[in-house]
Amino acid sequence: MKHAIRSAVFLFSLLLSLTGFAAAVIETANGQVRAGATAKAATAASAGQRVEAGTTVVTGPKSLATLRFDDGQYMLLHENTEFRVAQYSFSKNEPAKDRFVFELLRGALRSVTTVITNRNPKAYLVRMPMATIGIRGTDYMAAVVNPGFLSVTIGAIQVSNAAGAVTFAAGTTGFVATASALAVTIPAVSLPASVSAAFSQLGSIAVGAAGAAGAAGAAAGGVTPAAAALGAAVAAGVAAAVADEGTTPATATK
Image (tube, rainbow, N blue to C red; front, side):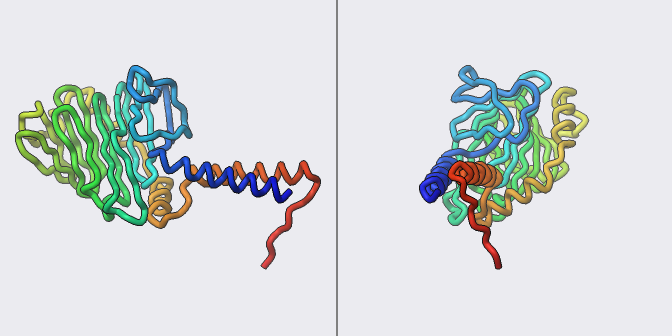
């Protein structure tokens, strides 16, 4: 029995260490969702699957994916979207070492940041073909349909390219024509119908208690939901091993 428990504890420790190499978990995968080193190499992905830095996530028509990152932030990907986790480094005890670099190559996304806001907002970047987005504590949406469009719900974002940097506050809508044209504010009614529909759908999705709890756990250095699931699996393994040996484990008492 002791051997079985030691083996299970070792397995749990190993699995926890392996999760450190990943960046996010696919929390929802509705419709055609694929993930891989490139869009061409991407294969079918499902809810619960871990995503590492360097992974490209692609959604098909009438599809949607939600990625929950280990620091608590969320990325919601609309249909016909290609999104890449270019770099991801989260150090719960050393915010200065955080580094979150994403790429929106086509389609639309919604970004909901959490503990980054108070830790190290400069660590976060989203690159689009025509500009780079930085945050000031935020819930915003972006679309790449050549040109690019933006909509800020909470906080503010800074949109930078060769022409300069422009800050968009909550309640504003932006437009970026090319990598050499300065981003500008536009009325929301000027959004193309497809972009307006994408923003409306993404904005209506609740990112609630689960995200807040995940962020708090990450900030406090607690066990993430994925690690908790691994722990439950290992606990089941211990119980099975004990049962095989015909022995009942002791129960702790106060």
